[in-house]
Each structure stands twice: as C-alpha cells, then as structure tokens.
Amino acid sequence: MRNDTWSLVPRVPDSNIVDCKWVYKIKRDQTGKITRYKARLVAKGYHQQPGIDYQETFSPVVKATTIRVVLSLAVSQKWQLRQLDVQNAFLHGDLKETVYLQQPPSFIDPNKPDYVCLLHKSLYGLKQAPRAWFHWLSTALYNLGFHGSKTDPSLFVYSSRGTLLYMLVYVDDIILIGNDSQELDRVVQSLNRSFAVQDMGPLSYFLGIEILPQGLDLLLSQKKYILELLERAGLSKAKPVPSPITTTATLALGDSPPCADPVKYRQGVGALQYVTLSRPDITFAVNKVCQFMHSPTDNHWSAVKRILRYLQGTSDFGLLLKHDSATLLHAYTDSTFNNITAYSDADWAGCPDDRRSTGGYAIYLGSNLVSWSARKQRTVSRSSTESDYKALADTVDELTWLQTLLRELQVPTKTVPTLWCDNLGATYLSVNPVFHARTKHVEVDFHFVREKVAQGQLSVQFISTNDQIADIFTKPLPSQ
Image (cartoon, rainbow, N blue to C red; front, side, top):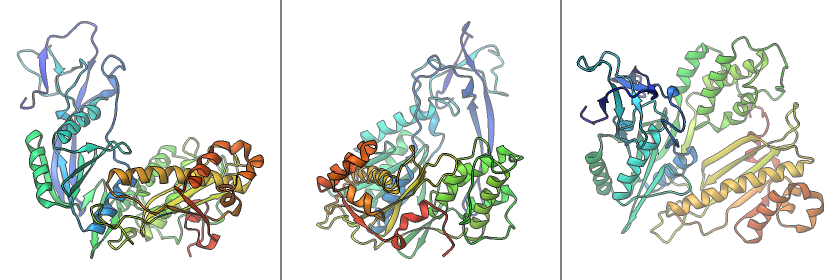
C-alpha cells in the first residue's frame, strides 16, 4: 500500500488474471546464523501470456568474469569493497503492460471481494519484473553520473576528477567499489532516497561466495555452499578422493543402466556448475557430466559423486586474488595494467560418442586467474592442429571482450596480450597464410585469429605441454 503497487478494480471480462501465493524463507549469513524471516508475495508468472501480459524480459546478472576482474583490480589498489542489498527490489519497477492479479490470500478486501488488483509496479514472479527493476535502477544511476557498460550490462562505471567507482548488479545484490570512500557514501545515500538500500558494510558474502581477506589478498571461497550441497546429496561423511575425475574415465551415452533418479542427477550437476565460479579445478569434470543431462546412467552418477567426494576433501580451497598481481595499477597513474596472459589447449576427438574435441583456456590478469572455460567444440575437427586452432579462436574471442571491458573500467593495456599454445601447427597457422589450402573448412576462425596477430593486437607463442596450464580444462589429469 505504501508503495502503491496496485489498485483494486472490477474484474474485466475475458482478461487474463494472474494468480499469486506467499513464499516464506529464512535468510542466513555465511556462518549459518538467521538474519531475517522473510515473507514475500509472488505472482505465478507461468500464468502470464506473452504479448498480452508481458513483452520483453531481461535479468540483470553480472558475468562471473566481470566480478573477478573488478575484484582483482580492487585488491591490487586496496580499494574499498562495499555490499548493498535493495529491499523488495522488484517492487520498485514501473509496469508498462496491463496486468491483473488475484487479491493476495488472507488479504482479500471484505468490501470488494470480487475485485482484482491492477498492477502499477512489478511483483516478484512476473516475467518482466527483473527488466522493470533494472530500468528503474539504471535510471537512478545515470542521474548520479554513472554510465552503463557495453560489454556487461550489469556493470556501471563512475569516473570524474580522479574518482573511479564501479557498481556490479546481480538482480538485487550490489557490490560497490571505488577509490574514494566519501563518494561511496554519497552514492549509497543518494540511492537510499530512491529506494530502501541496506548498506551491509565491507563485502563478505555475495551470491553464496565468501570473500575472505588473507592479509592484503582476497580468497573467494564457496565452502558453505559446498557443505550444503554435500549434505543434500548425503555425502557429507564420504571418503575424499584426490582428483575430481579418474584418468581412465570414458563417459559415454548408454554406458551402463539408466540412472534411477535422473532429477537428482540434474539437480546435482546444476549445483556443481555454480561451484565452478571459484573452483576452476573441477571445470572439466563438471563439463563432462553436463553432457548427459538428457539421459544419465549409473556410471554418470558415479562420476558426479566422485566430484562431490573430491570437493568434500577440498572444501577449504578457493580462488586467491593477490594484491601484488604484477603491474595491476591505477588508470590515473603512469603505469598500466599491462600483463594479460592466456593459455589455450584442446583435446582432439576426445568424445567417444561424436568425436568432437574439448577446448579450454585460462586467462590471467597479472598473476590472478580471472577467466577460464572447458567446452566441447561445435564441430568435428579433422586434425589436432584444427582442434587447437579452434580453441585458439575461442580464447582470442574472450581476450577481445576482456580488453574492451578493461578499457571501459579505464584501465588501459599498453602491451599486447600473450597467448600460449602447445601445438606448433596451430601456432604457425596464426602467422602463416601459406597453410590456407589445408584449412579451407576453418576459414573464419583462421582469418579471425590471423588478423589479430597481423594487426599486432596479439602475440601467439609456443609452450611445452608440461607447462600448459589449460591442459586441466581439456582432459582428466592425475592428482599431481
């Protein structure tokens, strides 16, 4: 009522009335202590009809790589990290469409029991609610002098007279980082005038990730999330294993009887995907078990349980962001953030079902790992050189995006990124146009990488397999 979320109107014939329900949740912090009891009215958005009740949708979810890059910058500069929480965020968004809602259970107006709610503001559960909230928030930030990023729509940057502030938005959770504590306070106070913002102080727990200071460094840990996951899977007392996947593992379609509980398999794998935000060591194993979501077998479930048992023994592990990460320095000084290194690798025809290769990469800013990937390639490669070259192209794709992001963060890169590859053929292909006759079918990838090298925007170097960091993203490796 205070927010003027709806007004009661007579029921319109032949209109779609969206139902609603109450959702109750107990919110806890990273130690498991109860912070609040929460009741929320949620619209049953699955009753909405596209084109009538909603048009376009969008959810403001900041990319994991963007979070790691910005945190890496903040740690190197010893900047302040603040966390904000917007109370009832979605209730602030203005609705453009006409949406009718049933009156909330137990709150039906006794004088107008047959009336329905005509929504003026968005509600949780509506398809367009995240988009409406994001429009409201971005308008408020633009008025404060922030500008939105082109590379990641959920990143906002403020730059004025030596002051640099970054804001990361993940739906209603916000990280605010900057080099001026007074400006940070000003932004929080200004936002508080537009909507109820809770300043939660220094960043400590964000999206299930614990941010643990280690001296001047930061450790990103998901220990609490991992322990909850093990509890749900009934493996909290399981015997740990030394690696997430065995070196002899050959997972294939129909390699054993079908899994007794495919829903449990999908839930487990989905949860493991989230753990890869701070745990690159399980990325390849999780990518492998993700390929059998549609028809999991007992063998695949055993592979999932092995990953969980590996996490059980390594729950304290996390991603360390070092403060002295080479030359990570402020954009307003003469030094630059000039050390981007990438490693690219591929395992040729590794999948026994369709003979596609798995490509992977690891990208470092200074000595901090900020981006990695393990992914099956979209097409079959006819040679190891071709599969490595495709992996090279994917890495260059991410590198290009990362450089654009750094420019928007006002952190110039004056030295050319170095890309390390352990396949001589792929390394030669990136600089030598004579090989074209053998690579007609990888023509686009070929020209994309070669053009970057020819323009001096990239340096591709050979590295021995023993030193190839990206090897861990392409095949099962022993614990050493």
